[in-house]
Amino acid sequence: MSSATLAPGHDPYHLGGRRDGQGESAATGSGTGGPSPKRIVVAYGFWIFIFSDIVMFAAFFAAYAVLVGGIADGPKPHELFDLTNVAIETGLLLAWSFTCGVATLALAARRMALFQVMMAVTFLLGAGFPALELMEFADLIARDAGPSRSAFLSSLFTLVGCHGLNVGIGLLWLLTMMTKVLTKGFRDDVLRGTACFALFWHALDIVWVGVFSLVYLLGVIA
Amino acid sequence: MSVDQPAELSKRHRADVAPGEAYPEEDIAQGIRGYLIGLGLAVLLTVCSFAVVRMKVIWAPAIPVAVIVFAIAQMGVHLVFFLHITTGPDNTNNVMALAFGVLFVVLLIGGSVRIMADMNHNMMHSPTAAHSHP
Image (cartoon, rainbow over all chains, first blue to last red):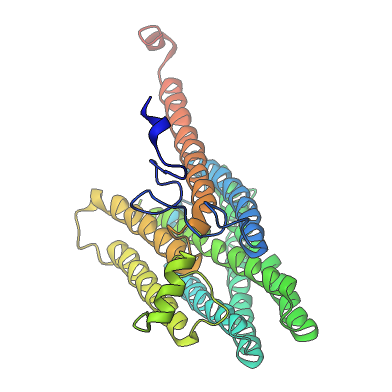
């Protein structure tokens, strides 16, 4: 084998991250960089949680996709869905993605006032979202299209309601992080917690992209 | 990126950190520009999705495909610009977890739809016809 002739530190598969395969990367977590900082490790652990959340939503999506035809002589999707409402909700969501991102940047730059203002704006935009969803649900129930009407409506209320519940939990977490940054300052554990909150909040956007596309937009086509 | 200063360039190169990775000393305006690009792309894809459904300008059977393609593209935009998934070494583990998550989601949704469609197909046959489809 020729491997005996290779210099120590030779890296044929570029595991060290350098294109020439020589020398190991100084990046943390690989090569000679030493262990990753806690910020990276905590974010990775939270990614695992986010994927468990997404797998749960995938199960609800699968249930919806299977049951969407089970209308039990009740109302069909395109008779119920109001795309204007969905468009407003999506607009709120895209706006809060941006304000939450700016809040993350303000935190990294240690700018307390900008952080608190942006988080407050994110909260207001976020609070509008479950409110609109509750109004839509109340309207559906008033039109005799509640969750007990058909399998399609059961799965719709479960999927959309679960997303709204996640947004509600995220709103509580948002207030917690605002208070923590205000009272404890820019401490490392508070910064990591806020980074995890930002991941959670942006992951909800991805789920909503699936909801408005696969449920509402594809629903009104039929 | 303000990488024209040699000191900044060499520091970034040595640290081998991907773009989009948070820096305590990062210029806030530069970060906001990244989020604005992401917001612009996400709004564009959302508007395209709604427009395709509302305006009925494209061939009807292609509309669901277009909506799904726009949705996947928008998920990618969110992952890159808002969740900061990058190709950097700091992110390798996150990308592996993402790949596993995508595999799981595809198997779960695709498998459920496929199996239930097959079952519905078989249930629609009358008992006599069922003999020809063992």
